[in-house]
Amino acid sequence: MFGKSRATVHRHRNPRPPVQGPRRPFHHPAELSDAEREQVLAVLDSPRFADKSPGQV
Image (cartoon, rainbow, N blue to C red; front, side, top):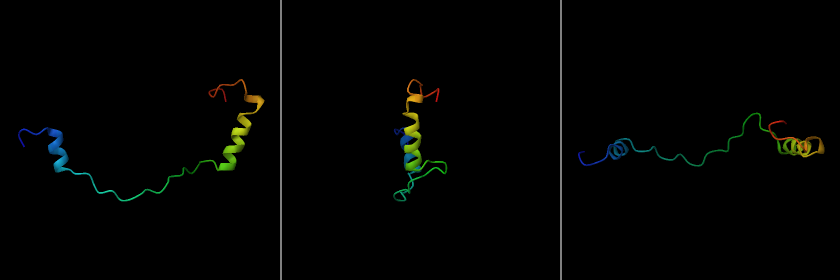
């Protein structure tokens, strides 16, 4: 134990758990569908919002 850094001793005593495999993609419940996202972007790209900053929208 002497002569080793504290972090090295900690890593040897507490190894990382094994990897479980690939994770499923997470989708937020309020996430927009692709069609909804395109519709929102079309409205924001319209002349009505051309001179607005993102904070003003």
